Amino acid sequence: MNAITQDAARLLETAARAARAAAAVVARAPAPAKDLALREAAAALRRNAPAILAANAADLEAAPDLSASFRDRLTLTPARIEAMAAGLDDVIALPDPVGRVLAEWTRPNGLLMRRVAQPLGVIGMIFESRPNVTADAAALCLKSGNAVILRGGSESTRSAAAIHACLVEGLVAAKLPEAAVQIAPTADRAFVGAMLRAAGLIDLIIPRGGKGLVTRVMEEARVPVLAHAEGLCHTYIHEAADPAMARSILANAKMRRTGVCGATETLLIDAAIAPSLLPLLVDDLRALGCDFRADDRARAIVADLPAATDEDFGTEWLDAILSVTVVDGVDDALAHIRRFGSEHTEAIITQDETVARHFLDGLDSAVGLWNASTQFCDGFEFGFGAEIGIATGRMHARGPVGLEQLCTYRYQVIGTGQTRP
Image (tube, rainbow, N blue to C red):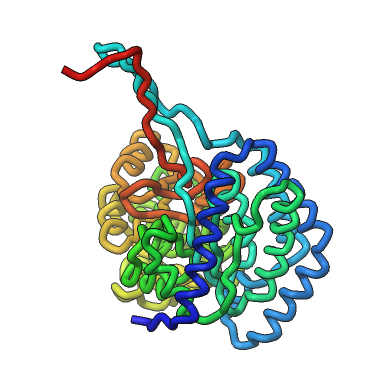
């Protein structure tokens, strides 16, 4: 367990108390004010793109020994900055989730019961490497009436600060409290420990990063956590799959971006079509730079595939490596997923609707797809404008976490003079 220094505890308490005061304001802020803040922040991101890229270049130069996948997650480009700004635009276009009437009913005694959405309060966001999370998380928290304290990885400090400055411009323009979106005032790891123990100051912790980070958060947190530990995603190619579709989807699911949590890590392929289709799939992916770990049945079809172990099937590669196993139908595929999966995202490729529905209904995972790439497990693709993370737990929210999932609810009870007998 990491020690919490007095300085870290003091800095966290100061930040959290300011965030709590800000949260009381943004929780009741009208939608036009929140949208103005996001609109001005998006404009600032576009206007300050050269400065953000320069800050990012300095971060990259200061960390020359990163893995290829980590470096990809850390790197900003003009297109990625524009995507951040466009994400804010998309959040603006979404309905304000605060104050929605989620349910309403009248009791026999005439009492009107109403369930109404309200913000969670103060969010603590702990993330690694991806500077764009600064903007995505801030946009979603602000629009949903929450304040947020952002603690990014030390390798992205300059990038996150440059992005945060644009968000503050938006808050100032909308006359909303700057403390509604804060970044950690120190890179000291003790500050993370202070966040995790800030019960009563922080209402929810959302970690976004590798297994080590999430494990630490889950072990140390005294604050509720919304998270996923791993993205061990599977694509299952059923014997009734269209071969061309299967080849296209798998190449995208594995190789579009290998370092994202929605990347497919294991291919499951039916024994009935494996002899004809698996060699083509291997050729496709090898041409894209992919390596493999395969079970004996797959290696009997493509002899030069490296052998897989159980550990391989339980590994989230986050790299150009694909585990491969041959299965005997949909129930065998589901059994493999239950044994090795992380309940994140799974896909089936088939033209048989009955089989597809059996697969989707049989999953425990947060997201199941039919005839689509696992890389669609993303808040933007779900129409959420952005996402603050992916949740695989069983409480509160699952899958991409957007505006609605950053709200809880309260009850309003309206009477006409009723008293209880």
